Length: 186
Length: 137
Picture 1 (cartoon, rainbow over the protein chains, first blue to last red):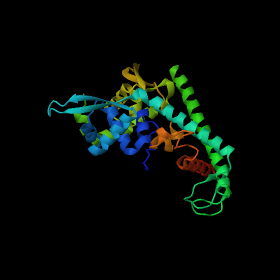
Picture 2 (cartoon, chains in turn red, purple):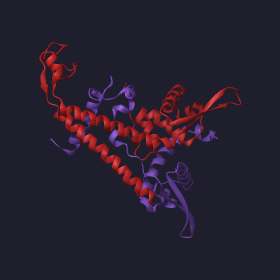
Picture 3 (cartoon, rainbow over the protein chains, first blue to last red):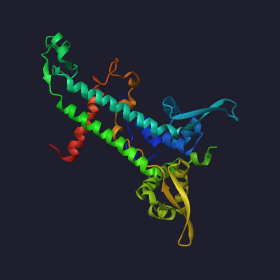
Picture 4 (cartoon, chains in turn blue, red):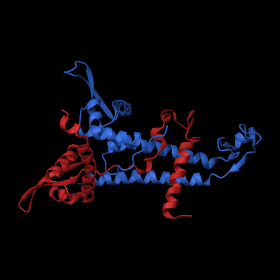
């Protein structure tokens, strides 16, 4: 599923940034409403954002599933039924971002090692999967999906891109640590 | 309790939200010395009341602190950043964040980073964009 990501959140609260990463513009609007109206119900958030109540609920449950918001069940005095009042758990946001960076970094590093230690073969058909050298031997260098001959694939662009992204994430983590220290000295 | 009047005023809310980011940006740009609240609302073309509301909003979120100071015979607040904006540029478009199989993804799992085309396309695409923006052939 493709989601629209929000890109104009540089100077936003970390909580809003995460919401943008998870679900784009609609999530950003819900997150902002949560920050500005603590302990709001889904209906109040829908009024504040102009979003449909179903969209707000879906967003809230998703954020709740990621432990980014907490809900308290209270009785609605006018109507007599129970409603949930939601609150952003802003103390979770930094660790969430940190964890996401580290997880992504680990996956990229694993992939880079895999790319560096294997040879790959492909038939040229876009829908067919790439095979390793070992898999290609078993298949007698003939694609098991389209029967075309498997040729060696040059993965140097991918390796270069992986190295670049790994360095970018590491730099960002290190910069964040340095900035955190400098802010502590304020 | 929720300020009902505030949340019902959608247009006003959206306007203030963009301004919150602008205010935060301006405070960050002034570094640890901070910026006077009176300077801030003048620079952003706001009223004193709006400037004050936005600064209080950021203070409530614990990302700035306000210190009462006397400036040119008038009381105002010095706005000092407590927290720098979190940098997420490197993983902004990472497919892992919205991947439904993310929990199952491991080097020896059914879903693995070794075969993930989303991961592959993401890094290649971003690297190409970076190279073209730098004018690298």
